[in-house]
Image (tube, rainbow, N blue to C red; front, side, top):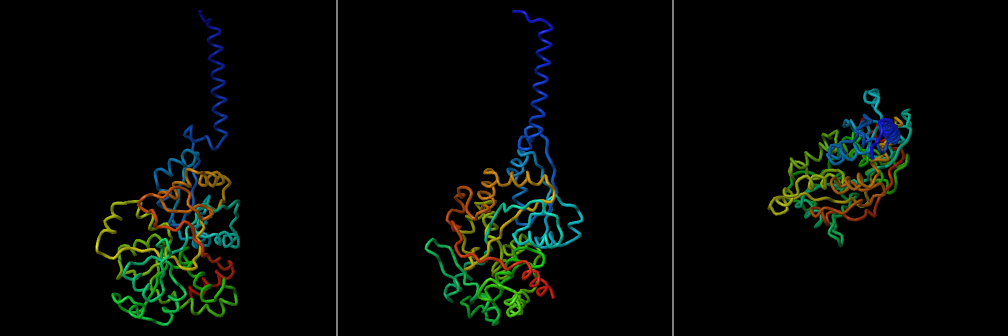
Length: 368
């Protein structure tokens, strides 16, 4: 049957109206903007341990699917919420590595629209198998039934404060006094959280102002003993791997760092495991502290970034490719065979951080 020109024109007009209406219907729904290639660009600062996650092409593609393009720069967690030189760049978001940074940001006058914990990873200690063997003989390290290593951090801190030699702790291959190194607590979150954990362990409970007054000098001595302290958790982890057992016998880091390094090149990890050289070992302080990673929204558009990052797809990528646990501290996907059995399913001995006032006062003391 023939179709008249008028009917054909009406059909085209209707299709155009439907298409235009469909376009604006999608355009007005942020979660569908990625279908049109429309992306909202957001600039902000992140902790260095999340740099590889946001540079992951799968993560970038998933964020594009939510209509988002993230331009992030690395800064220390403490720096990003306190340094005016960074805040004057008008970031839309801040993504530090500790929930207490939200309180510190508010106290500093940052206008926070929203905040949400996106990722979690416990603070751990990285060492080497010969060191762990010696500390095990000395009673400072014990193995769980699942084969994970727990560190009596309080006993180690006491040994450091006493100037105990490595040989006295069963580690004959190392020269000099025992030491553990973290990042600069006034710049980087892993050092910041470790300082709170140190003060609490010395105090015998979650540190208060009274505990700081009584044990602050000892905490200061622990950090003075470290010598040079890196400004970045990522840089310190690289120094640990490059320096080996002689250069960095024990460092403070995040659980996800070794996982991410293994998954970047599983065959490299297999070669290391099969070699006769010293092997990296992750130790779980008992107790430890959890490094929660809250996304702080300054611009209202960051609410969309929060919703994207807590989506099942991005949570799965965070765990399976980068070793980050979910907001509740649990796995959010099936572990890769390369890291099967490496991580405990749950961390059962976790100590809360001291409050923001105590931590800020401690930072001033450590900086003096």
